Image 1: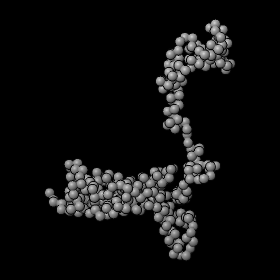
Image 2: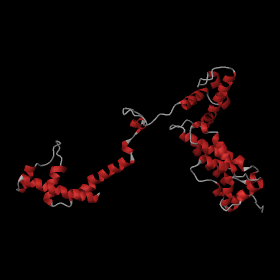
Image 3: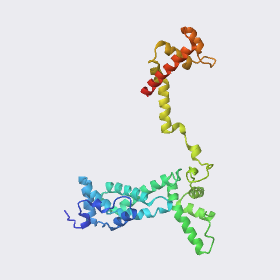
Image 4: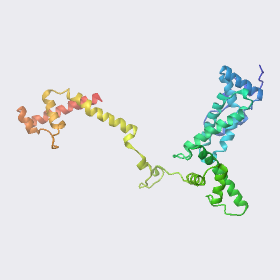
Length: 310
């Protein structure tokens, strides 16, 4: 077996070479200082991972290619997403590549990993660059990731010809050129350009605006009926209104229960309530005031029962 003498790859814990999270510049600096593997080292580590599931070998393969992820992620900073997040997604792609890499295929890991790194970063950008996805088909994805650079090329050409370089939209000739090169329809180029040029809308303008009358999409996007806490509260009310009330009525004596049911739980067909205090007083042979006292005492018992039930 080949003896590996590189000091940076023979430390007990190679992950200790990477600084803790929170300092992106230090991470990038450390990643750029990590040594690249020779072909023999790369193949040996890859075989150890494939044949023996050696996680330490996998870690060394990942570490030696962190600088590649940093380099690739810089190409996507123009989409306004955090560089750290782009690197993180690229590292996910790198780990997937290391897991699937076959050293007997005759290619270096750097070439194989490039596809996986870009794929993860592309997926992250498409999910997070806009709330509404701007690219769903393969052709649209190709258009999305090439349109920006091609527009910059057109501007550079216009600048060299002393033309107007301040316009932000493509002219018809440029639209046709993009469509022909990327093998898409001219209408798709125009639509993608419009969607990419659309500004982000602040969902809640009151969060950063002193104007109390500010109105934003959050006002009509919110669905209180399906908000988790509201759903829990509604379910609790339903339980108390059915099982809870039934349990609370069971703690009352027969007379108190009838008074409560007639006074609060009974609704006639005409929409009116049940019996009045005087009606109940006549039925039980007591005064209306006594019925009211019984009702108050019964309601206290039910309230205590409901609190215990909840």
